[in-house]
Image (tube, rainbow, N blue to C red; front, side):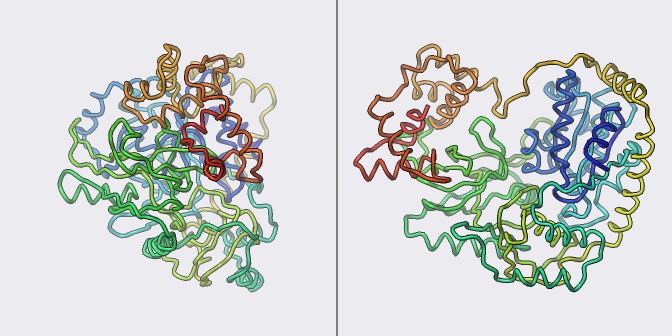
Amino acid sequence: MTQAQAFAIMKTGVNIYLTGSAGSGKTYLLNQYISYLQSHDIPVAVTASTGIAATHMNGMTIHGWAGIGIKDTMDEHDIEALEGKQYLWKRFDKARVLIIDEVSMLHAHRLDMVERVCRRFKRSDKPFGGLQVILSGDFFQLPPINRESGADLKDMVLHSEAWRIMNPAICYLTEQHRQEDETLTTILNAIRDNTVDTLHYEQLEGRLNAELADGVRPTKLYTHNANVDTENSTELATIASDEKLYRMTSTGPDVLVEILKKSCLAHEELRLKVGAEVMCIKNNFDAGYVNGTRGKVIAFLDSDDLPTGQAGTPIIELYNGKTIYATPETWAIEENGKEKASISQLPIRLAWAITIHKSQGISLDNAEIDLSRTFAYGMGYVALSRVRTLAGIRLIGFSPGALKVDPEVLKFDQDLRNESTQNELMFGKLKKGEQEKLEHDFILRMGGSIEISNKKKEPLIKISTVMITKELLDQGKNIGSIAKERGLTKGTITHHIEQIVEQYPETIITHIRPQQKHIDIVKKANKTLEGEEVGKLSPIKSILEKDGHNLTFEDIRLAKL
């Protein structure tokens, strides 16, 4: 099925399971459908099973959206507790369409919990309370992790009651858009079809300890956390600079604290140095980062630089060019509105290496991959499909067993292909007038407008908090005063100002404007940079320091405005 065919089916309002191989354009199509709904004033809830996947569509996790958190069970008392939260009533009252991406990693019982919560808040016995539900994923990728038994196919959403009652129309995309290498695409398709032969093995074995593009540092993917931790510790030790230690703090019963530790991926003891590769592990839209964002530590703040007085706060330059401040975040378990347990730690972890599980949903130019110790179906497929070309892969360990797929998934996948073909034929028979009527009926049923709206999409940064900063800025207050009044760091306020200038270029910022000589030297330094370093704060600061100029990162950011 093509993207256009799947898009046409979506617009009729039926529940959908959207699938296809890695790189088939599932996320692109979801974003296209989100834009379509927004253009017709139909509110859509955009979610995913993981934080990384959610960020691809400017969404949130399904656990957070539905209010279920990390619970494994939910009784009537729990439902009643959720009904006491006004923000959930507003959220469900507004929603008309629910999108859940990366459902292969979502537990069946959690989808059932979400479905139950939807019915309760929508006050309807229809599946999911009458919402159109779009599930997206690929069951050849990694299954959910069971805390007791590890990865288990029995936990997949296809075994849920919610799947049965929603009865989704299957849309199986067959085009390929991510991989730029026909050889790699052929290998990946062979894994999905269980037709891997000698030639495919030889092609992959040819990438054992192979050379990658000069000057490009690969991300290392391992099957086990122990290898990841060893690799990251080794790399950290090679940096000849002072080490900072950040210890996790916790409150509550040990059993609940342990659950939080396993679910949030934060280090109990986080060791950092300037130059350390890190990855964000929590969403903080106000500060400008999300779960899965990668960057490098470029400095540490002194206590005088923070309104909270926290010494040693890491300054991180993200690979997208932005700079953030990693201040402690809290993960908590609540029950009946009361906090039962919590942990607090910097929301980052070392990221020279990551697990294959954590890589799901990420696209890489190149990677070093260890497939010698895979322990779950789908690991080899996920790891190889993260990379765009075969030349971008260096295997540092390989076992033929890594390419095996689960027989149950193979059988179910064939059923999905057959159902998709049937849907393609059935919906393809619709005449233009019939298709348009179904689309219009759905729009009206969802309370939307047939006429296309010109409303802009919500920006990634929550506009409400940015506007608070803008109001204070318009009052003539400086960055330090705004940070103190709002209880935020100067770096966060500077990030807000960058957003404000982009969205409202007429905003007056002369009272926070750096000296002209500072603007000039920053521009001059930036002009000397080449390639990926252009616009990056750390290279600019290095040039300025060599020339005897002691500007802070905030000074440089403001000068760039």
